[in-house]
Amino acid sequence: MTVSRNKLVLFGAGKIGRSFIGQLFSRGGYEVVFIDVNKEIVKELNKRRNYNVVIRSERNEIINIKNVRGVPADNEIEVINEISSAEILAVSVGQNGLNAAIKMTARGLLHRYMNGISSPIDIIVAENMRNASRYFGEGLKKFLPADFPLETYTGIIETSIGKMVPIMLKKDIEEDILQVFAEPYNTLIVDRAAFKNPIPEIRGLEPRDNIKAWVDRKLFIHNLGHATAAYVGYLYDPGFRFVYEALAVKGVNEFVRGTMMQAAACLIKKYPSEFNLRMLEDHVDDLLCRFQNKALGDTIFRVGCDLFRKLGPEDRLAGSIRLAREFDQPYDMILFSLICARRFRAADENGKMFSRDVVFHKSRKNELRYVLKKICRFDSKIDRDVFDKAEVLENGLIANGLQYMIKN
Image 1 (cartoon, rainbow, N blue to C red):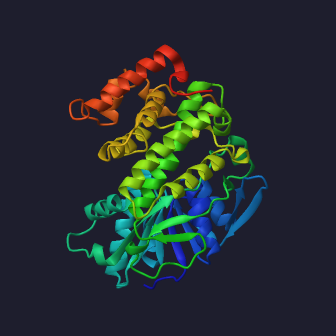
Image 2 (cartoon, rainbow, N blue to C red):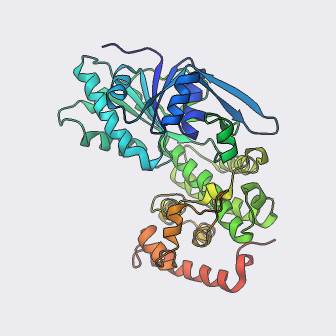
Image 3 (cartoon, helix red, strand yellow):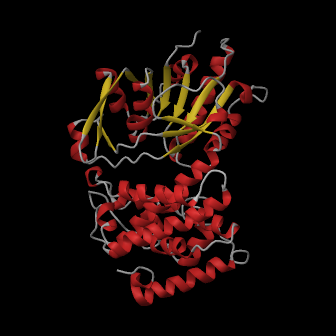
């Protein structure tokens, strides 16, 4: 068994997989082999061996991605063989599909090792979550023998995923199941130190020494600001469909910026050697401009849905509140955004809410104390100030509406 040079095996032929990871490596001279559960997409990839990424901005651009093919995720033998002969692996399946990808990756690694390929392999974990590389590595250990040399045989690469990709509408999928829309931004930040092999010389791949700082910047500025725009924007006008509509409201825009800057102040405290005020102000203003890309058509539904995850203890809102408390920084705007999130009921193009958000609004799971304690995992005694401030903000919102915190 030998390694196929310039071959990337990528778990996930979804929006980020095709528009970002697959696109970067294909244009960098790699064959990209997608592993996916969607057999129709796999079939079309194998039939055409190319697909289009439509860049949505003031001037649209179509990028044709070549030298691609697909393998059904349930074809274990074929998947294992592809992993065994890959030069590099990547994963972009979302948190719900991550455990299945980990299990199959472990099988492929073991097969590769047992068949005499002693050279290490790098795995790019392209997931929007903190400590993704640690989660992935610990997951692999569960499916590998205790004496497997995981630490030396694999480089598990954490990333910061900043590319925005909207939900594809039914009509666009029917037009072409493989096409995917995306914004022009095309930078994949990766952990320099985690690579076992030379870092691929690919345009758009940007290694960083302190990857934790850049993952936190993505989560606590980009994701936080995006979610705040969705939650406050929805409450301002439930008829808004797009994020740019919400941010066109001066008061909403200013509140979102202020919320992002509260989180930025915390990041400066935590990572003083990485960030400064000017740098993060520029980043916030650039993001607000990107969020208002009308051509992208990013919806409030997509940006705000999946409340159980987005209100989770380490995610964009609760996580940034914890960071603020760690460095004794104000977090009232961030907390107000969380309170607005409890009222989020946006629907997709078919008028349907995200399925787990329906559950969120049942059985009193959206009540303030339940959300803070059971979903955000704040302790009612240790984090007493969070509960007290949340109650004040909640009462202010009930009595005065958004104008309690947002000035128009």
